[in-house]
Length: 452
Image (spheres, rainbow, N blue to C red):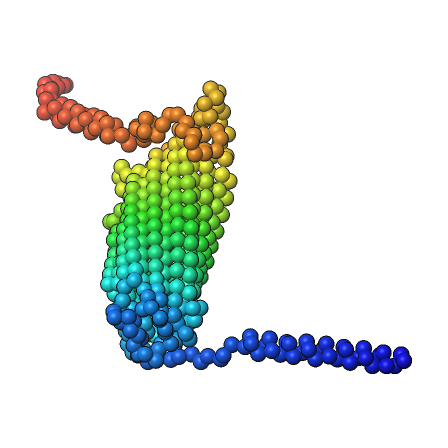
């Protein structure tokens, strides 16, 4: 009896195990995806103006001539300076569907091949695609109001290259391991939001009069030369709310003016922010405001006049601010900053208007309780804050005296125009007096001879 019960139990267990085995095999069978081979193209794929796809064998499909989806990985082995995908139609979506568009590595770069190319197009969206190993991953010429969203763009010479293009949006992309992550040339009013720009040689570059572009909420990290680099008239751009971390130069503004660098976290760079104007060109009238600048070798380096640096937290850098050589009677305004525990708070080779800053190593007193020290900070006239704050500055607090009221006071008397005018007048008077006295020498009678 016991033996029969055991036998029945064994049959039941065997039946359950067989059922589970069959069930798992069926599940595995339904989950297996068909194996796809990369589709290699030796010619350009076109999305024509009429909505058709050429060649028709290309692994791209559309049911409405609006959304075009990749159905396989594409390897583009195209001729010199050719493109793998060219979009000739406006108001479309190129959906990579998480497939890869790939060049042939160094071959594609030497052939100056582009992954996706738009010329004079508008309202095109490029999304959900990995784009790699081209000379230019995504390239725009004279195109406007397009969107590059949610792509992985890697191992190209230029991840994204734009020329004479405006009002485009780049957001949510991962742009890594390119020579240039993004390059704008003569581009305006483009918006760069929430991208990860890492491990490129240059993260973002703007040149040749790229104007009024905005960069916010991006992670710009571990780029070997520059995180963000604007030069040659790259002006009126706004860089705000970004994490600029572990680059050689975090933000470098060269021969460019009227840019706004604000509310960024700038840490662990060789140079946090650089403002310079080589070869006779100025990087003036830039505003650096409200940034957290920490743990860099140089927090800010300024080698150009007429910039305003205020309201920043400059903390734990080797040098807080370095002001290089400027021309005669050229200055920068540095005020309302918090200089905290920098090895060298300020090092300057030129005079700057430095006042109303907080210095963590200031030891003066405040007898009247106005939160402004009674004695200046700094012994060198070039680094002398005549109105040091007794507590860290914060937005909404505007301690007196104001910068505008005291700006003339801060320039040493010997650098004022009237002091030089006085010296010139004194020298002229002395020279005239000497000349007059020489002309009017008093004749003297000869001495009488002495007779023996």
